[in-house]
Amino acid sequence: MFYGEYLHSIDRKGRLILPAKFREAAKAHFVEKFFVTRGLDNCLFMFAEEEWRTQESKFKAIPFTKAEARKFNRLYFSGAVEITFDTQGRILLPQYLKDFAEIKKDVVVVGVSNRIEIWAKDKWSEFYGNSRQSFEEIAEKLMDA
Image (cartoon, rainbow, N blue to C red):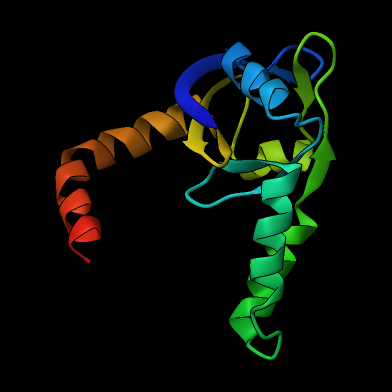
């Protein structure tokens, strides 16, 4: 549902404009509500409500008797915030999430099919630079499994 890579900036009030393509996809799939939380690799994960509920069910199924599961769920769910975008397509990211992802002003908004990732521009550049060379090797390992 969400595809592509878009460069945006946080405005002076701390708002981020979602890419028009993502807003169009959300509208086409009747998505009105999103959830944003701490992601992996120093980015934020943003899920449409239905996908959030799917992910939530998976994580809730992990036995809470396992210390790693408790730790992950605490960090993941305590960081979550429910959001909607305004009429101009803007969302307000809480400061604690911007701090987690080291977001100051420039961000890259990335569509990863069932989720959106929000990256500090420099963190995305670093990740992309370190990962693109191994893209084919990773594909071979994942596809041969």
